[in-house]
Image 1 (cartoon, helix red, strand yellow):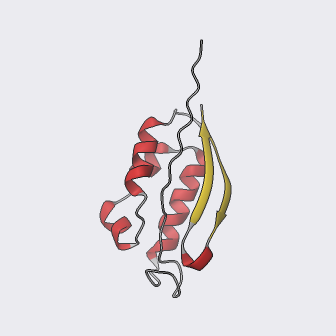
Image 2 (cartoon, rainbow, N blue to C red; image 1 turned 120 degrees about the vertical axis):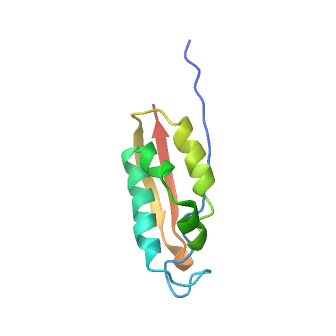
Image 3 (cartoon, rainbow, N blue to C red; image 1 turned 90 degrees about the vertical axis):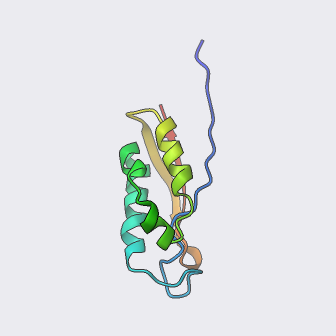
Length: 100
């Protein structure tokens, strides 16, 4: 018998994508958010695990720890897909799935 597990992880990406963002603009935010979105799209846990704590703190990417725990628990290789991503108020939001 195979048990199924559902894990829901809430993790904020950067809050510094535009001048009107809560943390104002930081040019590094686009690259970091793009890397996280690509890792979530491609099911690449090592890319999520490699997030730099200092850079994430600078970018107000408060979901780093949650994403890194998720990366440890995710099957490799996994089937991943970004279902939705948007940038309201200069804050990167994403909804993704990752399954075995």
